[in-house]
Each structure stands twice: as C-alpha cells, then as structure tokens.
Length: 192
Image (tube, rainbow, N blue to C red; front, side, top):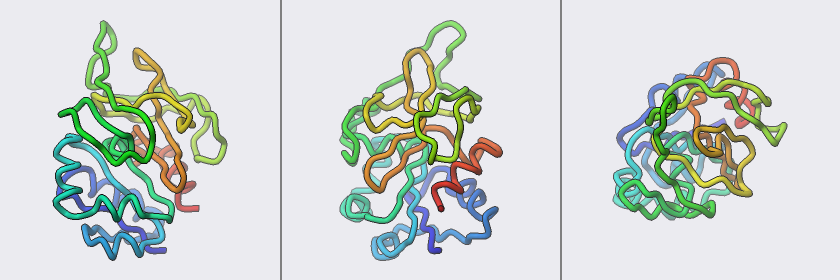
C-alpha cells in the first residue's frame, strides 16, 4: 500500500509517519501532486495555523489535487479543520469538502484553551476503530461545527466533532498518533 503524507513544510509529519511505520508501512512524505494523486491512502496532517496552511496548499498548487482525490484520505487535527468551508482563524477560506465553519473554543473555569489532554468521546459509527467511551488525546484551540458529517464527538463547552466523514474523506480532531491503543485502532481502520 502506498501511503502519502502531504508535506506542507510544517506540522506533525514525523509523529504521524512513525504511527504508520508501526503497521509496517513506509509512508512517503511529499508535496508532489502526482505522487499524492497516485497514493492508495493520503494523510493531510495538522498542527499549525489555518491561514498559513491554506497559503501553503495554494502556493504548492495542491488545492485541486486534494479536492480531486477519490481514494481514502484522512485529515488530522488542523488537517480535519481544513476540510471545512472556512475557519475563524485568520478568517480563512478552507477546502470546502464539508459544510460548516471552524470556530474558536471558548475558555471557561476548568476548561482552558487550548484544549490539551485526554477527553472521553461518544461514537455514532462502529466502523471507525474507536468505541464509545474511549479517551483520546487533543491539542487544539479551534473546533469544527457539529453537523451531519460528525460520527464521533466530545464536549468541551459545546459539542466538538472528533471524527467526521464525507465521501472519501475522514477527519480526526484528536491526535491518533498520540492516543495510544485507541488511536492505533483508528488508524488501522482507516487503512483497512
């Protein structure tokens, strides 16, 4: 299986690559449109700023490539947020694969922003590798709108989509590469 991690020049590429190497895969890290388009599976990694990430996608000429993918593709953290129409972070137009907007989390006593740490999830789909009640690791200050694409969520001052699915795309707001056995099962389900 050819797994390509989209190289935007920043983010959690190393830890995501290592997570897939544990399955015996050797991910290709690339910003080449042809290589990305020819992959069996594609990962759009995260950690960073939505405005800068979309500038990188545009400057590398990858918007059309990402929107044209038909094979299974996974956006992780910021990579999931980029799948939505827009983000409040830098008032950014995103890829528009999923309807909705990415909005800042609201801090409150006992609920700091960024949301960093383990949170329990509620799962509405049994084919994503994680189960109702699993604890997953989060590190984010923005969250996507909850909607029809949401298949798992947590609560952090509001319902926060944890996993979304739209067509061939799956998104994970949590960090599967840092979420222990539950994260590994999620990645394994994506590869299956």
